Image 1 (cartoon, rainbow, N blue to C red):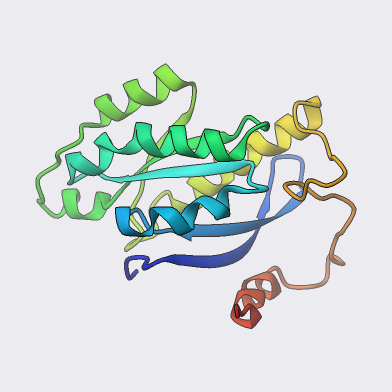
Image 2 (image 1 turned 45 degrees about the vertical axis):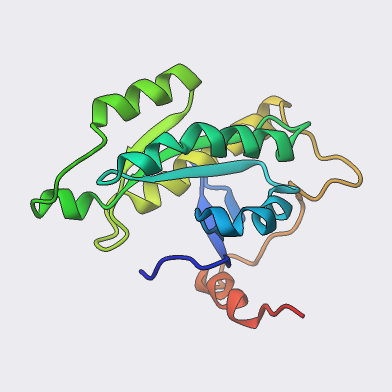
Length: 181
């Protein structure tokens, strides 16, 4: 897929282990420094974040602690769910030089108590699993009472469900209707 310039929005349905379907609103913020000032507003009402780095680019991995700190600062008071996602696995499998070892990334994830996975957006490898892992953890925190539905906070909403006969792809189509300004 093309790199993000600014911010892209997507909506997606993910089914967790007990069969509950969760609607995600995904904000893909650009990792470039020049967009950092506009991405801060997208943390509001968030409960999770995929911290994505390029496994062929050590510098992108070195910035992960900064992105994690920033996300925590703007998502508070809620403790966000993070997943560390290495991308461009297809390039490594095609012979490109890996600059971030899987062991290094796993060690970082373990130190911070977060999920780690390597993916390929080009082939789709493990992309769904990355979203499912974060969604399942958010759902588990709701079930355990760690995340509460609060007045005035739109991070988690409950009670709305689509009839089972509707296709989940309808949610995908909603992003095309979104507009700004």
